[in-house]
Image (tube, rainbow, N blue to C red; front, side, top):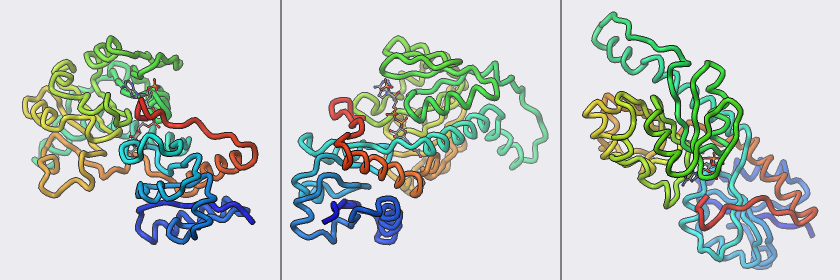
Amino acid sequence: MSETIPLVTRLAQKDEQKWLAALREKLPIYNVKSFTELDRAERSAARVAICANPDPAHIAALPNLVWLQSLWSGVERLVAELPASSPAIIRLRDPQLAASMAEAVLAGVLYLHRHMPAYLRQQQNRIWQGIDQPNAGQRKIGILGLGDMGAAAARLLLAPGFAVAGWSRSPKNIEGIKCLHGDDGLGLITASSDILVILLPLTKATRALVDSDFLAHMPPGAGIINFGRGPIIDSAALLAALESGHVSHALLDVFEREPLPAGSPLWSHPGITIWPHIAAVTSIDTASKIAAENINTFLRDGTIPEAVSRSRGY
Ligand SMILES: NC(=O)c1ccc[n+]([C@@H]2O[C@H](COP(=O)([O-])OP(=O)(O)OC[C@H]3O[C@@H](n4cnc5c(N)ncnc54)[C@H](OP(=O)(O)O)[C@@H]3O)[C@@H](O)[C@H]2O)c1
């Protein structure tokens, strides 16, 4: 009998059906089934499952699972909700998602670099006035996080000629990018970034990393782009820095609570541009292909892709 691959999600039924259809197309020789349709024998036999925001009780109900392929790239919720004894978590690593994120970072950096928020305000007040425009090479862009997303974004920002630096936990070497790491590296990138792009995962170490002390060390008038996770920025500290003018503008795609509640002061602040978590949207087509490749390899020769480190949290 062919191997059963459970799909475990808390998605709306119509969204889960779309994933099921794509995964079945890419794993035609296996029996890809929604968790809710599995019988007792299938639950017990499953060695690998695919998940998107799974109910932890459903993962616990698959006792012989060796690993779990997430359909999302950010795994902080899985890490928080699944006990440490759970099967290995494999996050989505999709070059298409990284390319899409790089495109969003380029759009966001150009938006701030070319004073778009200020020109929008001027238009609303019928003001015809140019603002001093530095060249791209005079603009220092700092990227927190040089993983799949950060490295792709850093490379794309070289094309218009920006001066790009990046920061990661471990040392990196990326041609054309000033690569920094550790506490000293953080101090350097904070103090020198005219536009700071956050592409870190949410972990114990990154939660509220961008607080009032951090913001005070940024150059006056700096811009901030958060495409990582909302709680990496202390939003009260950000609002205070915007009020004082120390931070000129923030482009935010991710928030502590999503959707951003209607009553949030972030919605109406003139120094904030809001995107509804769309910087890089998972493509069902490429993500299901990558999940299928990983599962095919495992079922052929037992290889498990590199797992998330539970101690690091990403
Ligand atoms: N807004 C969106 O639409 C969207 C879409 C996709 C992803 N995301 C977010 O983007 C995040 C990054 O994705 P990714 O695929 O690039 O992740 P990744 O490949 O795991 O890279 C994470 C990067 O952050 C660095 N890092 C982590 N903790 C750190 C710390 N404490 N100090 C310094 N550096 C640290 C890592 O350093 P090392 O290289 O040394 O490990 C790595 O360079 C995801 O976790 C998710 O939250 C957002």
